[in-house]
Length: 180
Ligand code: SF4
Image (cartoon, rainbow, N blue to C red; front, side):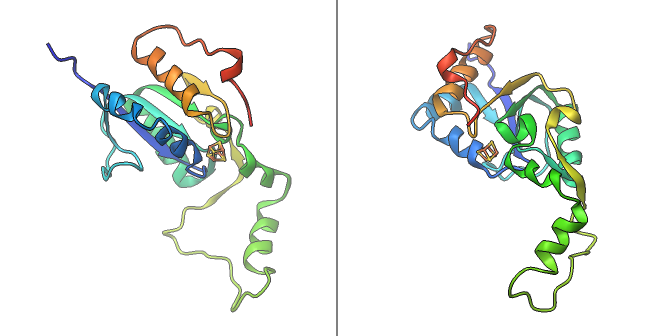
């Protein structure tokens, strides 16, 4: 009997898509993965609505109101939620803005930037409002697994995915865990 494939969704919040690129670095192992999982909503598919999933993979921290909404939706629909990469784990490089007031960041970018014509801070209601600070995802929802690295290597992702899909306890070796 053919085993049903696990449903997996992925998203990038305040991330750079580097963690997704590291996932694609699995190269030919992606064919093996495609036989075991089915992608739901993800930057790699055109699915707009998140379905009920077994696994959700979150790249990036939380920097605006839409990130909060997406993250809470992933928590509600995914049985297991995984934070992948430094940004999701601790806010990462984008959290360097936390040492400045949001007002100063906006004014520096949109009012005082070099070469600006008709400088103004964007305020269209379609644009999600920035949060005062960038947050790691675990400050918003419960996270089941954390995979560090900026980004985690494809080999680390592969070890992790295999252990997770086979139901083994996740145990990465010392050399597979890094934070840079
Ligand atoms: S952890 Fe690094 S690679 Fe991943 S989204 Fe953040 S900056 Fe990009």
